[in-house]
Image (cartoon, rainbow, N blue to C red; front, top):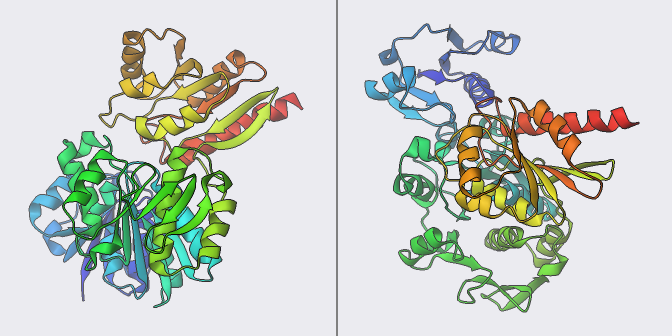
Length: 443
C-alpha cells in the first residue's frame, strides 16, 4: 500500500486529498498556512496533518504530490526535492488512474479561453467534455466525478503543472504561444520553453501536436517536428489559416466560417478560434458544431469581462491578465479613454512593451508588489498620469473619481495575484464586487 505526502492544501491540494481518499490510498498532508477543516476530518485515509511548520519525515513516503504554486526551490519543498523521493504534480497523479482521453492546452496567453472554448464545441457535438486544470477546476476533482472511457478532459496546463508531469500522452495538444513569463521561477526562457514542450513529449502521432506559426518561439519549435499541425492568421502554409477573412482547413480546403461571424473579437481570439477549430477537427467534430461554437461562445470570466456601466463609465474585469503580454489584448480592445488599474506579484517580467500599448490609457493606478517597478517604467516612458495606492479598493475609489462619462475603467493587472490574493479569480471577484457596490450607491 502506497503512502503519499501532499505538499500544499490549497484548492488543488484539497482535491488531491479527496482523490487519494476515493482511491483508498493513505496520505499525510503538509501546509504552512492551512487550517484543519471539516472537509479534511471526513477523509478516512488521511493519517497526519502537518501544519504551522511541523515537518514530516520525508523518507517515510513513496512519493509526494506538490501543489503548482509551491516553489520547489524554497523551504520544506526544497528538502523534499533533495531527499530523492518521487515528486509529482496533481496532473501526473491523475494520469496514473484515468480511463478518459486528454486534450492538452498550454501557452503563455489565451489558454483559459481556448480550454473553455474547446469544452464548448465538444459539448455542442454531444461529447462528454470537461475543462479542468489551470482553468480553476482541479483535474482530480473532475476525475473523481466523471471518469469513463468516453470522457474528454480538456486540460489547461501551466508551466508549473508541467514541471512535474511526465506521463502526459494526449489525443491532441496545442501550444498557443510562448512569450516571456514566470522567469522569477524558471530563470531563463529556455527552461520556460522546455516546460511548455513537455505537453507533447509522449505524443505518438506528430500530427496531433498543434503549434502557432504567428509566434516566433512556437514557429521555431514547429520547424523541428515533421508532420506537426500548425495554424496561422498570416501564413497560408499552415494547416489551418485565414484567407479572405475565412478560417480555412487545408486538409479538405473547407472554409469553416468568416472571421467577422466569430462572437469573440480581436486578433488574439482569432488565433484561439483557429486552435479550437483544429482541435475539434482532430477529435472528429462535425463542422456545423464548430461553426455554432465559434459564433455563440461568449468567453470566460475574468478575461476582459464587461461588468457594469455606472454613470456612463464602462467597467471591465481582466484579472486573468497575469503578465504584460496577456494584458495587451484588453488594452488594444479599448475604444475610449481608459483608467487602467494594474500591479500585483512580481514574476520577473519587463513592462516596456506593455506601456507602449497605452494608446487609450489616460490614467494608471498602481497597487501590489510591482507598483514601484511599473512606476519606474512609466517615468522612463514619460507617462506622468498615474497614482500609487495600497489596495484594490483604494484603486477603484481613485478610478471612480477620474473616469468621466463615456470612458472606461479596466482592471488588467499584467501581474500575478499571489502577493495579495489566493488567485486571479479572487482578485477579479473583489473588483466586480466593488463595481456592483458603486452601482448600488448610485441607485
